[in-house]
Length: 158
Image 1: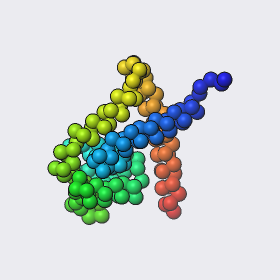
Image 2: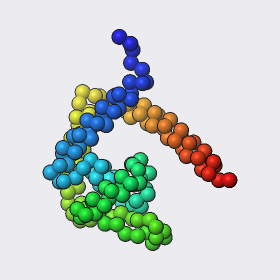
Image 3: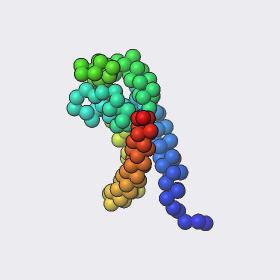
């Protein structure tokens, strides 16, 4: 049997993402919310003011069309309200409604249950190490993504 190496992170990370998404979807089903809608609401709960739609795209690293679809659904369900940005009429600002604030404890419970499952049998020291490791791996990807984005912009300017 070969030793575990960095390539194994891919398989484990995919399993973690897939399993946690399934748990979140199951937990949010009674609220008629999907994991993508729940993730956006969770993000909005952590903000102290209304958020630009573009900021959600960047913060959660979700495509513009996917965020737009999820926000449209959340707006239709009465959980968010979109308003035009006063400084940029093309941009939208997203604001939580009272209905979203009311279900916040239920949504947070679902995510806390997922975190509890993830932390079973894992020491605080291991969690700190894991977070540090994943932060560095994430930073590596962010640097490459940023470099590629900047390279694309330079190629666009002629």
